[in-house]
Amino acid sequence: MKKQFQTLSHQKGMTLIEILVALVLFAAISAAIIPQVLSNGERGKIKTTGISMSTLENALSQYKLEYGTKKMQNVTLDDLVAQKFIPSIPLDGWKNELYFEMDGSNILIISNGPDGESDTADDISNQDSE
Image (cartoon, rainbow, N blue to C red; front, top):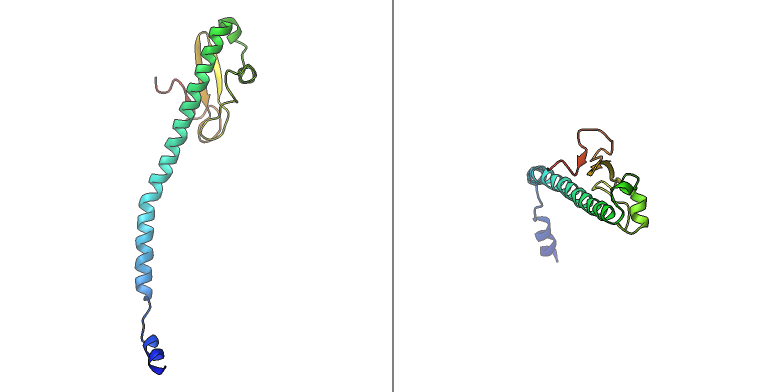
């Protein structure tokens, strides 16, 4: 029994230096990976916004075909939902409602972007990529 206690008392654990080195390595790896993960999240939200805009643009085009250009000037998102052109009011990648403006036959669909504020530099429209 004495030998067993003596063996256990001679075992060494990790030193403070080893623990600090491991923490520094972990921090360095995290610093390299975290920005990539966050930027992928933003790209995903932008892509989601684009898909929502396309869906809304298609619904507005279908509405125009069915009811004509004259009725298009007064259509709202609620009208599109009520008449089953879209299942619900479309949201952008940041869970804010999209909105649209009509200029003759042109449809401008707008997302307020990450900050959720209108008329700022980060706003996204369906005409940004054109």
